[in-house]
Length: 130
Image 1 (cartoon, rainbow, N blue to C red):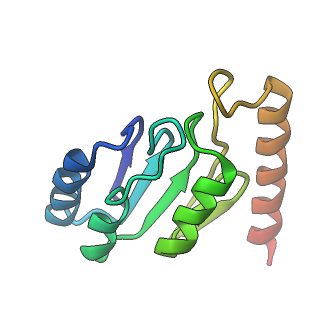
Image 2: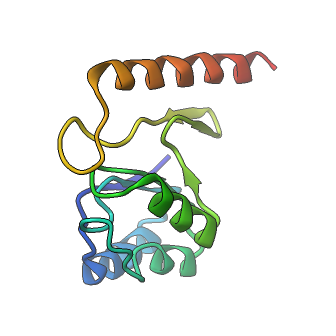
């Protein structure tokens, strides 16, 4: 499985376009946008579209620059999954996520990180047993 993981894009649409071309060329199975997709809650068009136009599967994990409403809007608009507090399974690979940071605009405490990861692990184990 090939995963292209990108973080701290901060609205750099030119970089996203270059990475979408590379992801298609390299036959990437999954693109993970791992936080700070935007810059200071400003929604910027062109951060997911180039990947979706190439038929690539995309997931998103919010960083400390994305509020929950912003990341959920992005996920709804492009029909991608917000992995914060959730998991996915692609083939025999399971991925679960916890976003945000312990600094900045949108942050979690250490206890909140632990609680989120513990809950997601428990859910993913329950899904495997089905």
